[in-house]
Image (cartoon, rainbow, N blue to C red):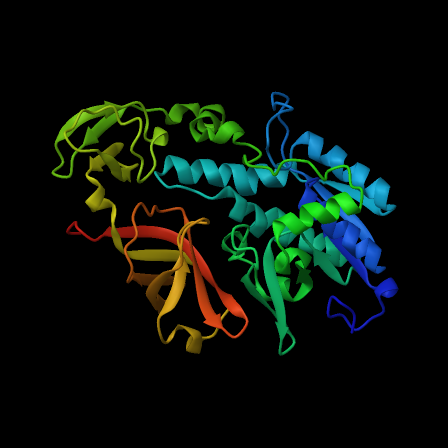
Length: 375
């Protein structure tokens, strides 16, 4: 059994490394090569934008492909580029636009992992007869009873398990995440020791098709007709202002409402059908229950008999919750205080065991129920 848990010698084990052109995936490719595995690097070209700034810290940008190619040449490994722009437009960008114009707060990075990365790239790696698909995600994978189990990373400031909740069991059995047990600082140190050209490259912060985090500019580009003016109302339904399009607002937003009040106002609800934005005071942001759609369950029914932990945003804390299932939906009762949860976000399930915080899957938030509002 080799270090990847595969019953082959390293030299006879073919691995595909998903190389984004960043420091994390580059270090993973270098480690696999150094250990003696048969390595092929794959970079996905997902998005074309001639206006993308060379200073933009986006993922999957044009410079990243060049960086991945240079790293591959430095390591003397085969490197392939897959042109997935059409898939990405359909599966990720169009889905993002649809969700955002419906008044939701979508997470395109999860959609990207769910589709072009862990579905299409997974299939491509299988077609290459690779024994494993290896990525630079900061998550831990522990083999137990012949299956891969997903856990939060050792470096919890970098943990990316939230973004991988939709990974299937078949995919987890095939995937490997070598960075799950190390700190980000150690990854940087390894990149320098291995003399990789990306050792000092900043981490990507922007979504590849959302420059500078400006979501509304994306909607203006792909669906300009979405900028319909409408009413800003209070919790009683009274109009207290006007907006220039619901896509300029997200649940929990405080800045940019432009309505005077003796107490700070926040966006409490967005109704795409009525084209209204409801605002109110902060106490009305607290959520007591959420309804989920499109579940992906990695645990078994016994795991959900008692209280479990959930995350409702990638940088959020773990919340005590109770789950009730119904077909392919679930109701989640939140037992801790949490505010600003929006439809379109992901809710990820965790259960503490001897190895850490195990990911039990999750679902997409379909509806929220405010604690201090009657529904």
